[in-house]
Image (cartoon, rainbow, N blue to C red):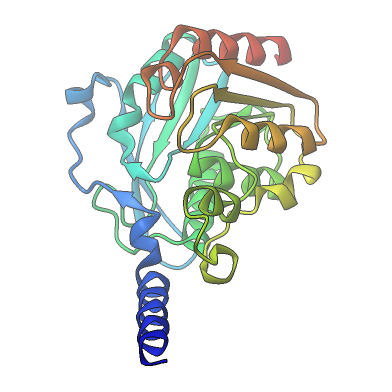
Amino acid sequence: MKAAVTLLAVAAAFLVFVWVTQRRLIYFPSTQLPAPGEVGLTSAEPVSFATGDGLRLTAWFVPASGAPHLTVLVFNGNAGNRAYRAPLAKALCDRGFQVLLTDYRGYAGNPGAPSEQGLVADARAALAYLLSRPDVNPDRLVYFGESLGSGVAVQLAVERPPAALIVRSPFTSLVDIGRHHYPLLPVRLLLRDRFASIERAPLLRSPTLVIAGTRDSIVPIDDSRQFFDIVAAPKTFVEIRGADHNDDALLIGDEMLEAIDGFLRRLH
């Protein structure tokens, strides 16, 4: 009996610890941000904008090579910062798209601490900034969400539909991903930030491109397919054979970039 009580006490203490520290298990920000020229973005313009709750965030606006076809607003995954996405921005700009590389609160030296509510507020602020620029056509905006950023992009796309939505390694909800990786934990009861794209996908109206790697060890491709299946908008699914979650094939791979380029040019 005493052993059972001790075991229950230990389990309860562990669950309390997980509850208190869970965001440290979700968000992995890097605060060290190089200059844009150091990561190959010599033409990038450092910019900043305010969020609705009073934070000032930094970003890089990267112009296209030549007249821009579209403006791509990038929402990062849960780790690193915008410098990690510089190769993607350069590749898109070389194809005639201008790009805003953003960072959430708590990332790249930005103030605040990340949370689902905070990241969505940051996304709204980034969009408002783009809409304020005279060189951005509000009818030719594309949201690109990577992994965790797919949940941010999907929510923003429901609130303010873009010309097109691209999501790489999207998931149905963070609850489903948590249950996949931690099957013994009561994830549904514990998790505060849920990014429930499964609830919002039927509300999407923008043409949507879903990209997923067949060997993704973080977001299983079956989960990305489930998300794709419930998207109500015109949609395209592209699988990258043999690609894991953090492989270059899902950042600047030729197959992924060609899929993006073809998808956007067919639309416009």
